[in-house]
Each structure stands twice: as C-alpha cells, then as structure tokens.
Figure 1 (cartoon, helix red, strand yellow):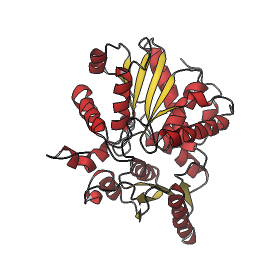
Figure 2 (cartoon, rainbow, N blue to C red):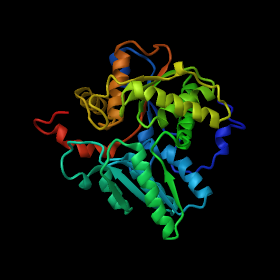
Figure 3 (cartoon, helix red, strand yellow):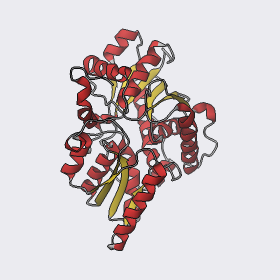
Figure 4 (cartoon, rainbow, N blue to C red):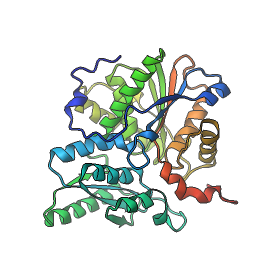
Length: 346
C-alpha cells in the first residue's frame, strides 16, 4: 500500500463529507466487448450528499477552509442544473452552515420547467436561497456577482465564504481528486495490476488537475485523458496545466508536472457545455444497458463516450488497469428527458 506518512495533503483543513473510498468496479461487459482484461469504473457517483457526485470531494476542502475561517455562510455559483451547487447546499445542511447559491443561464435552448426537475428541484428541497444570474459564459462576472452577494451578507452581520468559479483563485477543491488518485492507486494495487490510464471529464479542471497531480505526487506515470465538456481543447489544456502546477506548488512540489502530462481532447464536446451529442446519448444508453451505470448528458456521458472511443482506437494500454471516473450528475438526467421522447435530438 502507499505510504502516506507526512503527506502534505493532510495539512489542509478538511470536512468529512464524501462516502469514501468509493468502489472500483470491473466493467465486465465492456471488457468482453473490447477484449481488454483490466477495465474499471471509479464510482464517484456514490459519494453521498443528495444523490452523490465528484463535487463532494472538492467540497470537503472548501468547507474545511470555511470552518477554519469561522464562516457561517457558503456561496457558490454554477449552471441552472449545477451538481456543484446541489452538493454545496447538501454539505452546508450536513455541517449546520447557511448556503446561498447562484445559478447561471449557461445552456440555451433547454425546455421550460428547469426549476421543477433535476438539480434545481433538489436545491429547492434542500431549502437554500437561489440567486438567478442571466449571464452564462462569463466566469469573472459570475464571481463578481457572488462577491456582491457576500457583501450583502456581511452587511447583515454574517461571515460568508465564497467558492469562486474562475481560474484566478487557488484550486483548493482539486485536493479532493488528489485523494481520489491515491484511492485508485491503492485499489488497483490491491487487485495486483498497475494503473495505466484514467479517463475523466475536464470542465472546471479541478477533477482533471487533481487526478494528474495526485498520480504524479504518489509516484504513478499513468496517463490521464481529459475529455473536454465545457471548452475547446486549445483553451482547456492551458487551464488544466495552470491548475495542476498551482496544485503541485501547494503540495510543495512545483516541478512535479510538465506540459506533456496534460492530455485534453474536445472530440466529444459537440456544441459546448450542456449540449450532448448523438455520441453522448449513445454512451449513456450503452452505460445503462451494458453496465447499469446512469451517466449524465453534461459530464459523465461525454466522458464515457471518450472512454469507449479511446478503447476502440487502441489508445489505452492492454496490460494495465484503465479506469473511467464516473463523476455522477445523475439528477441532471431528468432535465434532459426530452431527448428520449419521440423525435428528441441532441
């Protein structure tokens, strides 16, 4: 097993939120189909917190810092169907803090009634105040508006902690995927097989950066394929590199990574964030019917499309463990029900 004595990750404040370690499960049907003996899914859809998902890992470090600072309210921003906002609200409820969420209008062309289903419905059930923000693809504007909400809370005597969206803030939440990298290494080692490749959705870059930084931090040279789900690879690659290098510096290892460690592909992105392709929908159906995995159209469905394509192209090593990270997002499926109705198209 890995020796994590004196691991610098343990020096950061952390609140226990996720049900971890999450299972590493063999993809039996996919292994038979592709003739690959070492295919697994890391079930980060099973982290708990109001239907689970990868954001629980990140929120452990954000809430750890919020508690260390004595905050009484946590603020976050995300899309209308944000998994991050939903799990942030759940985290606050679990820890006895207040939470206010800002929801951005990122995805155009969605049917009416988004407030009645999916993550938005869960936000309402959790009972947190929601601020609607009309701008969709402006991280700075979204963060600036969060600060205005924070100022209002301070004026009322509260002490807010803001989880920013933009890449100009320290990637504290990415430490959660350093933890995930360690779990994957321990689980593959326990199975007697070395880790060769990981496939993960690459959006904000926290999960992608945390995974590659964590693997290198714990001595693994495994490849991480980042499947772009929000922006083109030409924009995502420098973002992931920046976040990874910042994270490595936080761990006291500024020279841990190079540009060649970062792999991003936008072959499965389609028209952009929240816009599933025909390949996304096919991957969601194959995941459900072959492996009973419920994937979402925004993150995990596109990433699984990439995973299957990389397998088919022979891009992943046949003699090592290859792992798909299921980042969750299950509630978001219900917001896209129209795509499975007669005549529905992505």
